[in-house]
Length: 495
Image (cartoon, rainbow, N blue to C red; front, side, top):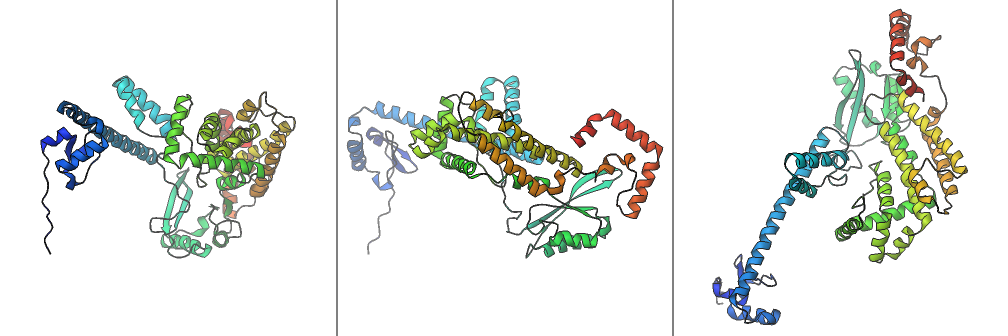
């Protein structure tokens, strides 16, 4: 069998008269920018391409093709420069996000604080032209984030994270006690064994444990869970509480059929626009042309409890742009829904109520809070829900600013929908918080120890220390001075 001729054909400068330049050893048309196969590096094949694809360019002078070649080279230079700028912008975005995460700040700080500050600083120090270059750097809340549903590592092993609050030198401190992989099961017994082994290895007596707070893991949920019961067997005086943030998120999940349908339609709309890059670019362009305050929608994630309110608020603010976009894309079913006044009123209400729930959630985040602070905040919000019902019955919606603004001069029957949801929210808060919502003097001895006549039911050693503390006149004077100096602290505890 004869050997195949593998001789490589070389480019001839005369090929430019036929509209071709060389591109990595292959002929490239300077008119349509098409790259032909290496075997096409022949005069007859290049001529055939020119005559069949660009018949109007046949017999053009060499200067014509030279100008096309120069244009092609300049475009490549622009693309290379753009790619370099784009890479730098992406890298800077990650650098900024890394430092935000390192300082344990909210991811939204990049869009709301860092970017505007950087642009102003660059504008003053260097110039307005350089400041505009920062527009290519994305620091929006949806750009760089890591979302996890379960606390598992890259190997798929569940991680048990335990935090501790303790007193050291008269100061209350909070730290990560340990983070340990659970090799096999994640049952209550396995979780408690990891805890017990850690305490035993470091000679920490269980009697020092004054309380235990659990999060959403099924094995830890409820006072009758194995973990809680086993801890209280070791530390009988340990008080059990469940995460206030987790309970609040659970209470806010349930919606009526009508509001649930509204939320589903909003989710479909967001997914239709955000999940398709072309749709997202077209929608951004439309928002720019219409002068909207925002140029994109946000994605909702169940793991991120606060995202639902932000998504709804953004959809409500861009409702006009959404309708126009859906009509242009001939997504008539969704476009019709977003054109209904009752539907938009529902979106406005959901944006308002979830914004209130987000504010409650954020007010309970951070270190230094006690169960007294959490109880006060939850009780206050529960009482607001009851109060709002009385206003809604009178068709007054001032507590929901977006809804109030939308229904002005509109005859929208939304009273029953809102009233039903507020009543449902109250029931859920009662279910998840129970006795916390009823007035109690259980913690009065902590708030004002000098007002207690009968000692609370405490272990003997603690009761003796309490007696010595309250009997000291200097302590009483210090406490009175503190109350006089910081009256709002006491007010925040009760209201």
